[in-house]
Image (cartoon, rainbow, N blue to C red; front, side, top):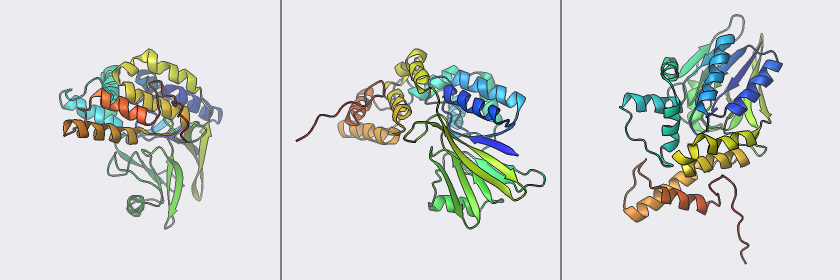
Amino acid sequence: MDIAVWGDVHSNHVALQAVIDYCMGKGITNYILLGDFVADGPNPKKTMELIYVLKQYFTCYIVRGNREEFLLNYKKNGESGWYKGSASGSLLFTYEQLTDKDFSFFESLPIYGIYSPKKLPGFEYCHGSPTGVSEVLFAEKRSLKRAMNKCKTNMLLHAHTHVQESFIYRDRKAVNPGSLGLPRNSRQFTEFAILHGSASGFDEELIQIKYDRHELLKEFTKSGMCEYAPAWAAIQMHTIRTGIDLSEAILLQAMRLCEEERGMVRWPDIPEKYWAEALKNNYIDLSGKDIPRKNQD
C-alpha cells in the first residue's frame, strides 16, 4: 500500500499538477495533505480546484495549515487589518481570490489526524504539530522530540518548515515531506514523500522532481500579486528561482529599518520603502532575480 504525502503547496498549482501526474503514474490512490495549500503563490484558485478534484476521486486525509487559519481568522474578525503592501498584501490577494466553498472547506479541516489502517501500524499527521498549526518542528530539536514522545503511534508526519527530512528518536520516526510549492533545495525541485506500507509498518521515500518553474514565475506578474505585495512576491520568486528562502530575514530587516526611523514597528504597518531597502540589501530585484554584486577590493 502506497500513500503520497505533501504539504506547503502555497498556491503553486504548477508543481501540484506535476506531483499529481507523478503519483497517478505510480497508481497511487491514497493521499495525505498537510496544509498551507494557498498564499504566497500566484494562483490559489487553480490550486484549490486541483485539490477538490483529487478529493473527489481519491481517498484523501487532509489537515489545515497556518495559512488557512490566518485566512479563516481574518474572515471571522471582520476582514480588517490587511492592506496592499508586502507585509499583508499576499494574504489579502489570496483572500480575495477564494470563495465561500474554500472557506467552508478550510473550516471543516482538523489540525491533526491519526491514520489507523487494518493490519498495519498507523501514524499521525499534522501541519505544524499535533497541537498547533504554527509550531515549528525540526529534526534533533527539543520541540520535535517532545511532540514525538506524546504520539500515540510510532510515526509522525508534519510540514511547515519547508525542510525535507526524516528523524528517528526512541524508536519513533518523524517525517517532513518538504515543501511542494516553495521547496528549499539546490535543484529547486518540488518535494513530497511516498509512504510504502507493509506488515511491519510504513517506510518513507523522500522525492524531488522537476516542474516548470518558468510557467509559475510568469503568473506572478499576470495574476496581480506583484501589485498587492511587491517585495514579498519578489522573495517568493527568488525562492522558486534559487531554493533559498530569505523571507524571514528580509521581514526582520524591514521591521528593523522601520523601527530605526519611526521609533516603533507593528506588523503589518511596515511601509514599502523599508521592504524595498531590505530586498536591495539582500541583492534581490523585484522579479526575484539576484542582483550582481560589485567586486570589492
